[in-house]
Image 1 (cartoon, rainbow, N blue to C red):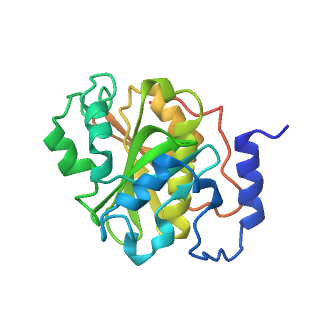
Image 2 (spheres, rainbow, N blue to C red; image 1 turned 30 degrees about the vertical axis):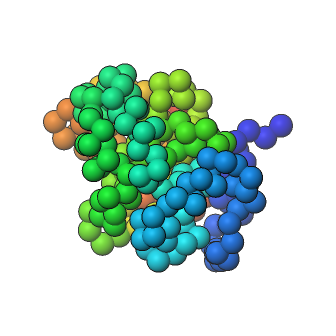
Length: 226
């Protein structure tokens, strides 16, 4: 039986050097799911309903996860998450108020910062965002619920988002900056194709560049942080 990483690697190999045509049609995987349907119906015009003017970019699909733009519809859920000390332990370390969450993570900062919920099947399991840092490059940040960690969901969501940034938005460089002491996060980013490039105080700068050939693979021999 093929597992998800291997299936993803095969798919990446098949589409390498191919021209991907986006039809604008919604995936059948999303039809009939109440949470996704509700998100679509209530997404305010101009805030995620047509990201960068392309309505077919509302969802970003991975093998295990999909990303949907977070909006005011999701405020209660996000406010509950970001008020949990365990959830924000590696996200600033301070629980946030509902007003702070509304201002930062419900799409109000678009297009400077694009915000998404991470779903495993149709269950919300985390939050991810990306922001441009100049032409063709930028950074992403991600946080998962504690019970969703260690299941391959983070690397899968990261791979899906990076693929979107590389192939749809044309980014040449995507970076993350986990705490250098957070070996679990560093290994998860490595499985998504990121490699360490420098140390910035307590944080490790990692980058993911478009693959010159072949798929991204899990690297169990990830070098130690020095």
